[in-house]
Length: 72
Image 1 (cartoon, rainbow, N blue to C red):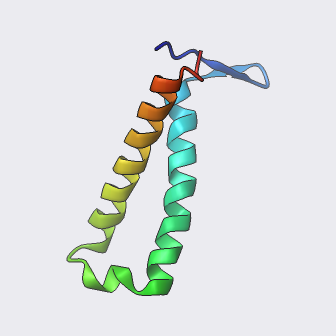
Image 2 (cartoon, rainbow, N blue to C red; image 1 turned 135 degrees about the vertical axis):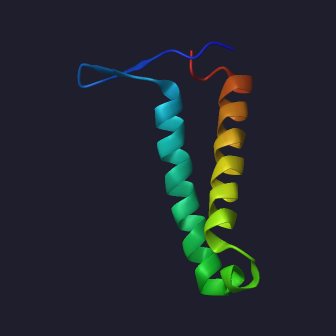
C-alpha cells in the first residue's frame, strides 16, 4: 500500500485530500436522502450524526483504495 501525490495543473495534492473531497460529496448526497426520508429528525444530534457518517465514508474510501492499490 503506497499513496502518492497527484499532479493537478502543476500542483501536487495529497491523496487524502482527494479522498476527503470524494467522501464529502458522498455525504452531501446521503444527507439529502436522509432529509427527504425524514431520518435526521429521529437522531439526537443531526450534525454529529452527519459528521459520523462522513468519518465512516472517509474511512471506507481509504481502506478500499489502500487495499486495491489504486493510489500507487
